[in-house]
Image (tube, rainbow, N blue to C red; front, side, top):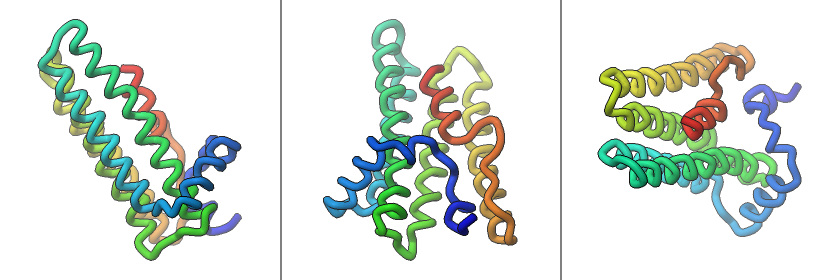
Length: 172
């Protein structure tokens, strides 16, 4: 198994024709992988903004904000998919690419999960749950990185990978 395969999360969509075609087009258009990573933060900020806006609303307005949040989540995940594909498969890796691959994910997780906690005003402990979920997500990635730095293969196991966290958030 190559070092690259040991460091990349296995994602089924990465092997699809549609994803390969989009990633190839992005690479052909000269879109930098780091810019795609930065875009994932913007999508997460859109999710967070919609969730926080939903907090102060009721009825149809609240539902509309929650739909906006649910629609922004897959955009974040697509950006996370395409940044790596453009970098690796498109041959556009950079010296800072690993940082750009990970740091926007941690920022995005924090934005989405903390905002999800704030979006539930009827539950007094919901903001604490949002912060706790964000901390757990960041620590999980940190421990994986420490393991890799110590010479272990990256472990992408457990019940709540980024994709699962975001699907649960979108469905909630």
